[in-house]
Length: 57
Image 1 (cartoon, rainbow, N blue to C red):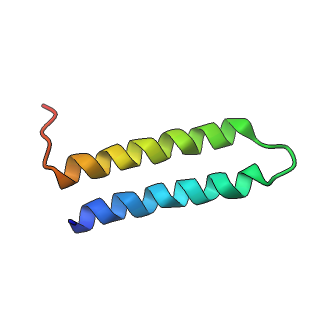
Image 2: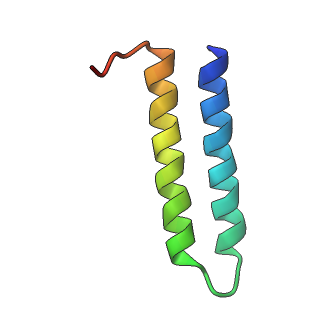
């Protein structure tokens, strides 16, 4: 796995950990959870693009 791929996946994992922590919060903070979920997906897609050298242009 490329270093840049692992870095994107590590950042996505940070977002997932943030979600786990927020889900235990009393107010649920659903807007913040939704934001981090979207970010985790986006960072994972960026990891795939980097790993497979996908040219989007």
